[in-house]
Image (tube, rainbow, N blue to C red):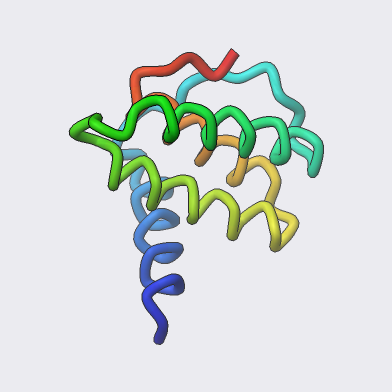
Length: 92
């Protein structure tokens, strides 16, 4: 199994276990919502490269991208929101 599959599996498991509350977002659970959140997370990652949670947030964003590409938009948008939360950035 590739690293990406492990990362996506880990993200999915953490989401299913509900290890943390997911930040609320106004983005729709659709491909458009995924694209908007992807841009927000990309900008937040660029602006917060020194964050202690940078690596975790980046892995979370990669998992969210995987869910969005599989058509699991709600899980993807929620995953991106969690990545923003890890970076201390608002999803709205």
